[in-house]
Length: 208
Image (cartoon, rainbow, N blue to C red; front, side, top):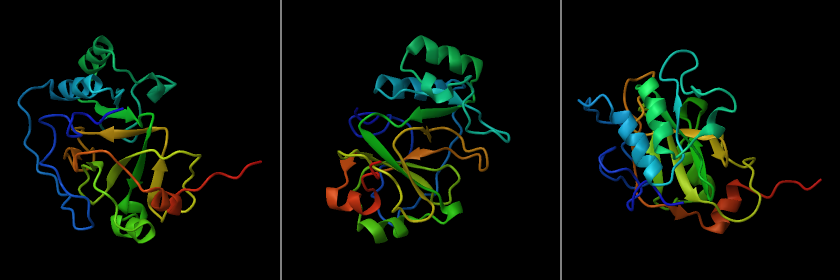
């Protein structure tokens, strides 16, 4: 699975690449698009790059939840006709994307105490990788890495940081329901966490 384009993000979606560091400026700059099909276009760009996508609720108490019936995100697709049908029916839907096979995502949520600094206290400085910056604008982000071998769990991660091996993430340029600002792509290329570092925050599960 490759990132959304050869540089790791869909062309035309998101700001210029950013380096991965605790000083990263995560304040998005937003210009409203004139084309009402811009989210559809972005979903098709992702699908063309091999990322399965599906529509999510754009607002309300169930914002970010799948608009599709159960099994929800398991119905994600790269099929052009299906994606056009979905975003024609729900043109403002957020774009959900299951974590691709072969990748993992580290979900940093400042509302639960998660910070990049706390994660790097465990792992050391992290290599620049493909990442998504939350449209909330509070420093939340998803860091995508090539998945190392072995069974991984998140028991050693600091508070407010989750390890996503399955499930899904909201991806750019979806509009955050709380801020009205878009999710954006940050750094460009997928990297692998060095094995010693990845084992500091993820270990083999207990065998029973």
